[in-house]
Length: 112
Picture 1 (cartoon, rainbow, N blue to C red):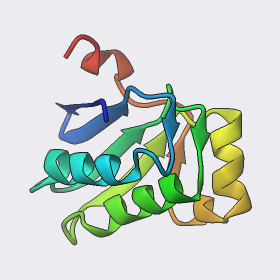
Picture 2: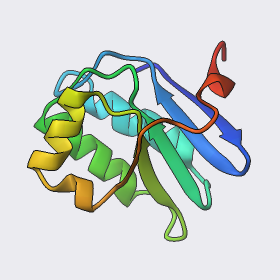
Picture 3: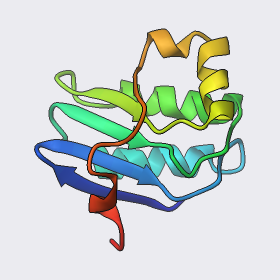
Picture 4: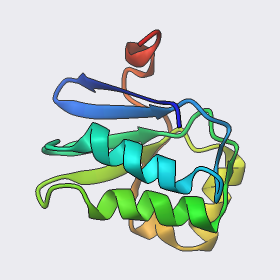
């Protein structure tokens, strides 16, 4: 699972460099997010700009990532495609996560 992370203005921005978060990669996604977000305090923004598909396993993996963050941290989502956004609206997960139109300083994690 290709995830890139960079702290920008005190916010951990994690960009998913994959087209899908589904059953085939859900466990890898959870493990990688756990590694990247270990000890993160405050906001963690998951940039889903490249992700075009999330199934129920992928959705579960994103929720699991939210649950293993430190109590003072919160997971937010950014740059959802229309298809991925629809999954979050249909499951009402858009009421659980703060969702942003784009990731802050998205270019800041390029090339890492």
